Image (cartoon, rainbow, N blue to C red; front, side, top):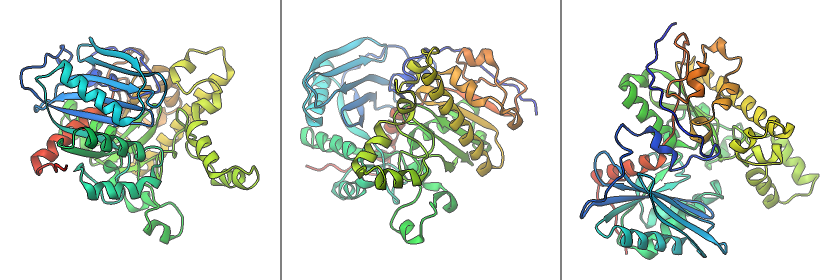
Length: 440
């Protein structure tokens, strides 16, 4: 089937091909949104926070329907002797860039809120939205933060041990600094709440599934943004298509989307499953884990460190977790093998997801790698013409929004995601639907 594709020829740079950063999201906003944002007097704003183990990434949005972004930045190396705190406005001009010791998340949030007061005293912060890795079985939408939610998230921490504790630390830090501020939690698992029963099962005895051990899926905020962006670009009927979205970055996954809802995904019970990632293994024969524990004498903590921090691109290459750095080492056999392994696994998972859809109409690459690495996209799609996937190599190299050939039966797109904007939309949604809980 021949299909004509609109395309704009817009070019992006290759920032960091292993990260989906707040900066990369600028490439997907409507025309005119890159104009440097001047903060007007008494402007209400929403702060979006993504807390990691040693960092706080954030973005500040004007509390308006279009949610124009005012600031973007990060506080890095928390807990180390030399932390870094940097903020830029939407035009790219630096507001803050300093190095200092930042002992914990509470101090990091104090610094951020103090900077907001100092550099834009007229801004009235009305709410804070948090990216939360795991919402459990019951969370299929953003919710206000209250004591009951926090207690439930603490119980869920073993399901996302390297993510949820830091998400909770960010919420606690805001409470300690500004207990008056409403907070809203947006869950990375919520988009996959619609997963069919068969896509949730693990093969373990039914009693384990009843205890919450099943496939949840992650990167939901990214998939939700991509679907909203596809509707903005192509109209609401795009949800009738069979779509695979490939969120490729330091953390990578793919999702099969049918009727606008998640039908299957490569990540499952944890953020370890599916594709290999920057430092995470991806799918692994469980017999390997038994061997490491019984024959190698490794502890559970050592295995966790191996799977989350020492594997993936870093482990296979022995050089770097960063795809951009590996692509810059064509002389290294190990770097080349790591890239080929990543692309081989991505190709297999992509094809497998089409089975759950009964075909494929549209493929979207996003994430730091997906949106910015033409060479990786080319390698993933090699040999898939039988699925109707045909690249236009010129469009692909120029990072155009639509990179498929006009004769391709499947539309292939590539654009940056914007999870922070999605969270800001959630804050406005929650505020409109019900009063946001304010607790001392």
